[in-house]
Image 1: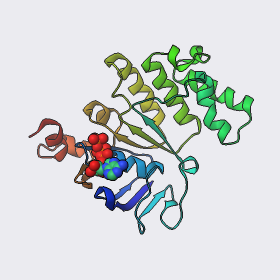
Image 2: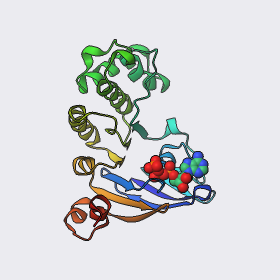
Image 3: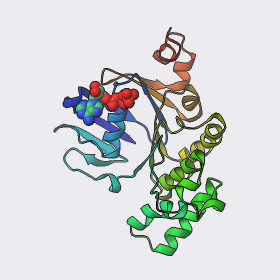
Image 4: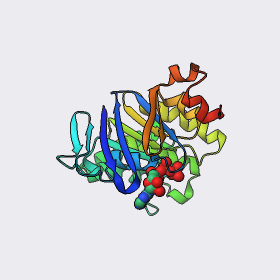
Length: 231
Ligand SMILES: Nc1ncnc2c1ncn2[C@@H]1O[C@H](COP(=O)(O)OP(=O)(O)OP(=O)(O)O)[C@@H](O)[C@H]1O
């Protein structure tokens, strides 16, 4: 569950959003509409103005109290995998588990299982520069879900992939979203169809339209249709 009621006046943004448990929300909007800022607020990378609140799974993480990013039940998969270049794929995935206090052997075993889960267990000893872009993004996905977040944020996760890699990763991301709450920023109607239950259209720093994808896909006058088709 996500409940965000917060402003960032410096950026001209005010968000009012309540999103249900176990559902995935697609965020779409033109450049500068506030997509990255919304992700930043959820992830704890951006602080809302005083008086704003963010509640994740019933816990207030911004507002009267502040919970830092690494203590939130949330992880982020971005367009850029941002792996540690000097660490193997295995150690990249194990890093967050170690940081959370897990013993080294257990963290490495969990990381190995995670890399098997995204079909690159056989590449676990490779450094990032020895992996293709698609393989690096699989490592990043394994890292994002290794800590078992209840909420997964996806910021244009397939934008840098070629078509083949995108198709394969889309299946893996869809699996990763099962049993989780998701938020995906995307410009790709394929991502919306594959991942999203609901869609929010951001405009001028606000949530301009919000509702179920099925309803809006069928509605010839919907904002979703106008956004993608221009009519
Ligand atoms: N670091 C910053 N300091 C001040 N204003 C910012 C900063 N980053 C973004 N903004 C402003 O906040 C507003 C929302 O920007 P944001 O990057 O969240 O939009 P976006 O929808 O992610 O855009 P894009 O699709 O271009 O990445 C814009 O008006 C932008 O100019």
